[in-house]
Image (cartoon, rainbow, N blue to C red; front, side, top):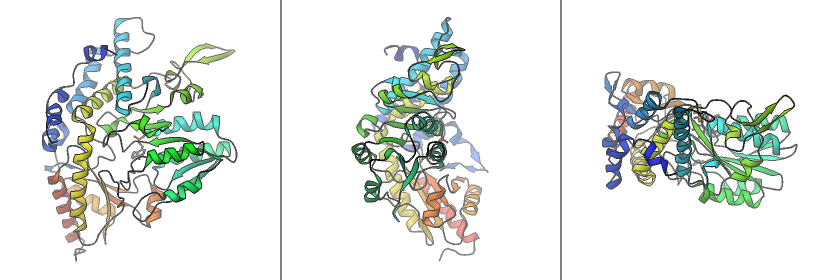
Length: 433
Ligand code: PMP
């Protein structure tokens, strides 16, 4: 699509600090200036935002793309005969092309816009799952899935009579690949696995898991919610059949995300929601469906959100996802070392391959209390089960405190985190021994 460069204005940050960062080492403090919210104080202190696993902050380029869409380009898309509608349609379809580029999918027709990862997984469960699963078939999940990659499968298994199998995890928070291999068999129809665990930080060996699943004749869905903002992802190299992501964890807006689906699979899948835009013809005798991806996009979508997600993708790609991954790995190694020096702190999730997520418990302090005390220090973390209750059950804990990193975090944020944990320990009567 040659129109891309001419129709879409260059996002300011991509041509500014992000582009500069691409030339040298990533300087988080410089990039942080692209994110207006990071300069607002919280509770009278500098905001130390370490809740990126829940949602990332938005750079000016994304905020501006959404604002600009409503100021200059707003109209409903597809079928519009007037200029503005065609313009909005172009922007929306160019955003789809950006998602394709992010994932290195073979075609933009393999990208379906959804509300986010949750809706993308539900789409596969309700469309592919109901059409392909029958009594006795098996769906393989892992013990570290987010609830959004468990509950849709439970619901569809109830309806179809298929059964769930679960790959166990080790004390370090890694998948037991031996157990995975032995779970795969002639009844396995689908493997649905998280790329990066939001509760443990584990990066799963997805390419190898796909190979094994395909050898058993099963399809593979990858939950990429925690992966796409933190490392390069190539769905063709992974070989997966479906890949789900959320825009808001990728510096984009909430309420927009995407499902990658292999072309021939999407082509054979029935609709799961009916309405405008997903049909070819409608009559009271019966209706026919549009081709993918429109078949799966019933109703008016989040057009402005898609356009702003496109800007977010431009932003991270201008910096370079390999560079972002390198920065976050360095920061994780630094934070891990610092955390290990805190007496009474136990890391939950110490896999060999990890992304920038530090989950931990501290002796004598409930994770929620820890989260509240850290908040008073201006340090925003998450505390609880992180929508991964089976992980907490596996480790015999009610929840963890979780610091999760993004491209704008640096050693100063880790120092603030460590200091605030020390303060919490003092308040809780010398848990620090
Ligand atoms: N999977 C994982 C691993 C996640 O971390 C999340 C969000 N915490 C989701 C799925 C669900 O994403 P969303 O709420 O954006 O649909």
